[in-house]
Image (tube, rainbow, N blue to C red; front, side, top):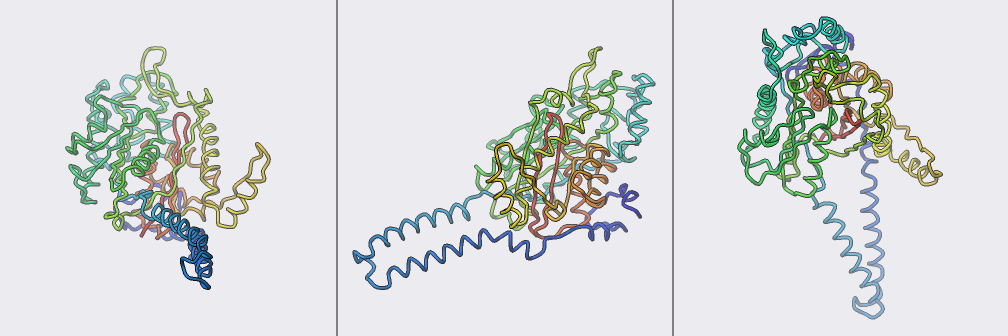
Amino acid sequence: MSVEQANYWYPSQQGEQNEILPKLKKNIIHPSPLVIFLEQTPKLLFFTCVALYASFVASLFKNAPLFDEQNIIALVVTVISCIIGVAFTMYYFVSDKHVYLLDFTVAELGPEYECTAEECLGPIANVLDKECSDFVIRVAKVTGLGQHTHLPKMYHGENYVPKSMALAREEVETVMKACCDKLFEQTKIDPTKDVDCVITNCSIFNPTPSIGAMLMNKYKMKQTCKNWHLGGMGCSAGVISCDLAKDFLYSHPNSTVLVFSTENITAPTYVGSDKSKLMFFTLFRSGGAAILLTNKKSLIKKCKYEMEETVRIHNAIDDNAYKVIFHDEDETGSDGVSIGRTLINYISDVIDENVKILFPKYLPLFSKIAYSVKKFFAKENEEVTCNLDVRKAFQGFCIHAGGRGVIDAVQKKFNLTDEDCMPSRAGLCRFGNTSSASIWYEFMFLERCELLQKNDRVLQLAFGSGVKANSCVWRKLN
């Protein structure tokens, strides 16, 4: 089976076998023991310097009593050095500047929610012009989506039912239950007492009370549990939520954060004739992900990954980029989300800006030193290129499943193989564009295929309205 044919295979459970798996595993370039050792060089140098300094101080006391006048300066220097050393060591080893991924789940809705490309409009086709419905179905067949993606309840009846707050809420609750019930069961976390913060994101549907409050009400969480809901943040909001969770955990030791990432398909349903707004039907599908992040020392051994880096970039300063994905009304007053044809160009620009910050951090040691020297001596406004071998730096890639063309463009930009992009294409085919949750469906593909080893890194790259490009790097712990 070729990689192209295997794009339609997405494992339904951990350890599921497929003939494409050996090729996927062979494709990964795992870090060598030498590379892992060199990554620890800064720490080794620090402790070596401490040992040498201690030897030097000890030599000062060889020829005189400890409190002799001859040694008073050396004694003062030693005491001050010890205080600084202890303070640094406590900060480095004791402070909770770590964020761990305990576990995560994705919503896999039942067969009653499934739809094919031809059925992606459901009863809505009855209220659209034939030209519009034909356009949607024609485009839906070539976007890379398969025949078993999911759409909410209003897309499956015989008669068209206008969108409503009740239907939108029902969709959120369905996805929420599919994610969170499974996550709490897997982790043995009690939502009534073990969750200290809830962060939710949904771009289009933002009810009152918030989706965060909806989740806390459903699982009867403790009154001291903090919560945030992020609205209007687009397809890259999943990384933004994790970045916010990181900030919370940095300032709240011994805590656990639940992130719920989804997009609502009911709320932005469009019944007009603007083709830029009709594009929504061809790509977006119901889905969501629930993620548990923690810095509790008692849970570290159970955690699967550690968050290493997050980088967030936006280009809202550019008016055209800002409006390339836009929620508004058409000339008849029908509201919908328009998706501009030039989107991929703006996405490419913000991705470039994002990796300018991210990639230098993952250069090999000597390349990193050379890059730093070039950066130091570079003239003002002179750009220093970072020649990172992306496939050696990261072993797993979760590229936002924004569409077949978007994945192709990112693959070409970073010189990735078809196997590297398999999680993204398989996720797009099986679940469609699930917006901010898509990178977690792709992460689940990596987990179920058991492709990664200890110390392997996963790069999540998400992009969307604003225009924004956000990245997150995870390191496998065991």
